[in-house]
Every structure is written in structure tokens, then in C-alpha cells.
Amino acid sequence: MRPVCVRSVIIVTSPSEIRGLIRLARGLPDFVREPYSVEQAKEIVQRGMQRRDQALLDKVEHAVFGHARSPYRALLRHAGCELGDVRELVRQNGVEGALERLRDAGVFVTFEEFKGLAPAVRGNASFEFRAEDFDNPLTNPHFRGSTGGSSGRATRIQFDLDHTGQVAPQWTLWFAAHGWLAPDRPLVIWWPGHAGAAMGHLLALKAGKPYTKNFVQVRPEALRDRVGAALVHGLVRRAGGLSKPEFAPTHATDRVGAYLTGLVEQGMRPCVNCSPSQAIRVGRAVAERGKTLDGVTFWLGAEPTTPTRRRAIEGYGAVAVPLYGFSEGGNVGNQCPNGIDDDVHIALDAYALIHRRRAVRDQEQVDALLFTALRPACPKVLFNTEIGDYGVLETRQCGCDFDELGMTRHVHTVRSFDKLTGEGMTFVGADLFDLLEGVLPQRFGGAAGDYQLIEEQDADGLTRYRLLISPAVGVVDESAAAGVFLDGLASKRKHYRYMATAWRDADLLRVERAPPIATGRGKVFPFRTLGRS
Ligand SMILES: [Zn+2]
Image (cartoon, rainbow, N blue to C red; front, top):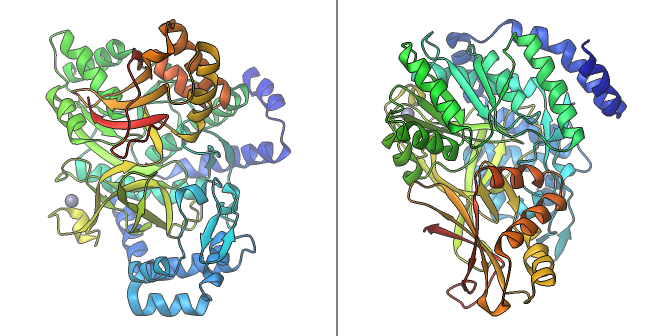
């Protein structure tokens, strides 16, 4: 082992973590040995489509009723529902039909309940769940760590080879549908360097098309996360024979842009996995040099690919292809070559999605998406569970290969609620309250209600933040206020350091002297999400 690994093992102290990493090191050679062929992938997905009912019932039997701490067991029992009742519901109504009946009977979990931030109140009963109660009791993850980028109190990632292997066939089919398996379509990744990103590398390897270039956008800041990431990435790189990563922070758009246009000049048509914001920034940088991104495809995750953002990316000459997934649940859906906006085919072998109407803060009602995970090794047990997103569900024929597999269910116009989203980083808004209502007024004067964070988008759909400070506060050193705010964020939770760094790198926060903006009902919230500026 190289010296860096020896030093790292001493810092990663937990014996279970070391055992997990040893299992990972042992499991990787077999895992990467045989990537899926398109035929194999198709067979696996078809089999998954045919046994959706059984996959759901297996989950309910073993991970819900067979698991004393399962939150879903408590909710099902409260609704008077035993395993036999669920079987009967699925037999009579199919998977989605049964899930809708159960939702109506109170068997669902809100985002706040899923994160352990609020009790689940159903009728006169109240349940307290913790985020870890939703861990899949049937799996034994190879690595647990922090992304620094996911939402809520628990920002853990669970890294599991079985789950990665179960997700990969969808990627193979998706790559094939877009022609990305061809030799002139090198895959590039430009992503934060947390341990969870290693799963992307493994997925690509298993799907038969490894990334040939790895730009690291943000390094983990906390020592423990950095060490965990170095270990996991090191093991994956070695097993997969992957090249070393190159650090390219958010503002390194010239370098990444030159790399991509260089590939195009050599006759390649690269595909780049990054966030829509980064794709737009690269487009701007390339355009400033009088070039275009003609020949480049971006496959986009982490943030919504809004129509504005998509138009901006296409305006720079590139092709935009969104995917939909989240760190605790893996890939949920992918866009086919016929797709528009952020529309994706839901991977129905792996997920069932239904709606639940709910209010977000005191503002509008949204159709929250309830997720039910069918993949046996999904790190979380998701059973009518919100992940903080809402969107539009549709069933229709699309005219592509995914129709033939029976994947006619689509989701589009997906947006997040109750959390801010920017630069691939999300966090629960409540964490801002202390800064905006406590720290800033104490330091610079004024009171709660004088400071407000606004999230909005510029003409290209890039996310920006404005920190409004009421003129009533008097003289304020604006750059000091921005600094205190970002330092405060970074110090609150270690994984927010990522986000503060990304905001600084991309110069995303502006301080403005203006009164905070009230809602239609006259309320002033410490933060607000507005549309286009
Ligand atoms: Zn399609």
C-alpha cells in the first residue's frame, strides 16, 4: 500500500469502516471484471420490469415487517395493515395503485419526517423517526461517509457495490440509446471529489464505458471526509485502471472548456457529467474565446435542468441530457434522445413514483413526489417517501427504445422544496435562520426580519444569491457581512463548508441594501426562492 493509505487508515478509526473498506478492496476486482453488455443489461431490466410486484412485496416483508425499527411498519400497523393486506392491495391494484391506497391511509413519509426533523402525526398518533431508521436493514454498505452536498441533517452517503451493480444496467441502456458507447464519445466527469462520486466511476465502469477524464470541482474540507474520499477513490481507480483526477474548481471554466474543444478538434464528441450551472459557465468561457461547444454533450444532474438553463447550454452549441437521481437512492430516471426539458423515463424496474399534494411553508401547494425503491440493495428503504422534490408525472408513449421495455412513465419539471438548491449543493433552509436572525443582527445591528437571503436565477438560469440587508440597519460593511455569512455557514456544519467554498469560487453571493421581500400574505421569511431575476 502507498504511504497515503497507511496514514489514512490511522485517521479512519472506526473498525467497521476499516472492515467495510477491506470488503470494498476485495470486492472491486470482481465487480469491475465484467461490464454489462447491452443485451445483458436489457435482460436484467426486463426481468426487473416483470417482477415489480414481487420486488415490492419482498421489500415490505423483509425490510419493513421483518425490521422492528422500520418507520413504515409503525405507519402500516397504525393504518391497520399487515403484510397480507399489502399483498392483497398489490394484487388488486398493481404497484402504483396499492401505493396510492396506502398513501391515502396515512402510509407515507414526508421529507421532514424522513430527515428526522419533525414527528409524523397521523390522526391522534405521533411517531418520532430518525434518519438512520430508514437505512436498509438488508444491506451492509462498504462505506459510509458524507457528501457535503446532500440535504438535511444526515448527509451521509452509503456506498454499496451491490446497489451500484443493480443501477448500472440502466446506465448501459441509456448510454446505448444515446450512442455514447462508441469509441469517439469519451466520458468526462466534473464533480465534487467526495467519496460518493466514486460510485459514479463504478457505475460507468460497470455500464461498459469508464470515464476517461476526472475533473474534481470541490475537494472535501473535513479531514475525515477527505481521507475517506481519498481511500475510496484510490481503491476504485486502482481496480478500474482509471487515470488520476485533476483539480478544476468551479471557476476553472477556461481549462475545462479548452480540454473539451481540444477533444472536438481531434474528432471526438465528449460527454460531460456535471451540473447545469457548470455547463453554462463552460459555455460562456468558450464563447468568450469565439468558439462553441458544438460536438459536446452534457449529461446533467444535481440541480434542475430548467428550460432556461437548457436553452442556455444549447445556445453555446452543446447537447443537454438530464438524468434524475439522488445520493441516497441512486438513479431514478434518464432522458432518452426524444426528451425535452428535464423529462426522464422513470426506471420502473427500480422505482414507483406517485404524488401527494402538500403545502410547502405557508406558500403554494405542490405535488410532492413519493418514492418507492424496488432495487433490493437501495441504501434507504423508500416506501411512499418524499425526498424533497415535486414534479409532474405522466404516462405516455415516447417512441423510443424505453417504450419497448414498458417504461412509459415519465417525470418532468422536477423542483426541490424546503431546501435551497444551487451549485449541486442543497441544505435545509432552517439552518439559515440562526445566521440571518441571530448572528448577522448581533454583529451588524438590526433585528430578525432585517436580513434575508434570496435565491434566484439569471438570464441563463444560473443560480445567484442576494443577501438583503434592510436600510433601517444603518451603515454596514457589505463585504464583511458576506464574509460573516459564508464563514457562519461553513462553521455550522462541516458539510456546509463545501457549499460556502463553491459560493465563494463562483462569486454567487451579493449583498444588497434593500428591505426584505414579503410574501403575498405579508410575511417576511429569512430566505426566499424567487424565479428569474
Ligand atoms: Zn423516450
